[in-house]
Length: 392
Image 1 (tube, rainbow, N blue to C red):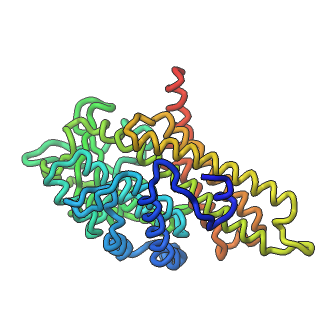
Image 2 (cartoon, rainbow, N blue to C red):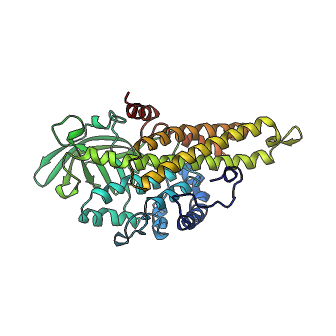
Image 3 (tube, rainbow, N blue to C red):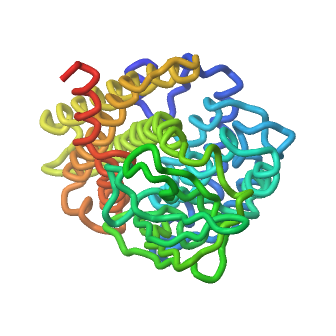
């Protein structure tokens, strides 16, 4: 993508490898959907601290919940690049919580079922998820096990016909509304990586969820969960018994790559709004964008956005080609999350007092962006991973 595409909103852009003209056509479809069905209601849903189930139903009707899944399950038969386009466009919906709720369903809850599930599990859980009838959540994080996923304590004891689950989960996106939770539990004697399994837990007595209030992502139902003698049938075991850590690691690259894609486009959207604002806002007899301090700050933002996009697209090319892009994705996740926060903060500053007001988009955008350096692996964990790849 040329620098001019960053600086001039609305400029026609040539497809960037690995995107094809087909992906760019999908982009237009997604952008129209976001503009018509999501963005106009973002403020209302933020204030209500919830977005309606109808959103998933409309997305399913538009063919947007199963872009990368086969037609036999109700999907569109596409690939990960199709989902990448959707995630970029969701960043323009005006609500980080809304984008997160949709993204969690398509990006982290359903992929493990497709990759590790049996045909019966795909029919029971994935097909309804693609139709927007049942919403998924990935339940890994616990009050005492966040970045250290191997330290989770939720326990599943083997009983006749299945498992009995006890424990708690924390910070679970879609945790309240979910029709199923892809849940990490401890099943084996190994106190660390080797004793983890995944169970698909369905709503029932003994599963308790409550919504957590947050700095941002207000429209998202981030949940605290507890399991009290919850029975899960043996056929809901996802993948191998005691082989769950492999499942956790398998989706980390994609989850972090999605976060990078969303953050770059979120920063881009804030930049475009700010560019428009500084061209209209007058101070001392001329638009504030005509002052050198404003021009230079926006120039710095443009460079940061372009660097983040180039790094992220490089990772996307590697991932799409089937290569192990762990090191590059880790770099992209680390760079883009903090970049997004910094760029939006600069955009808010250029709005002056208006930027601090809830009626302008920068206030919400900055609150929403702040989760980036924490969620999906903190900045500190990303640096640890990169340090280890250097042999340190």
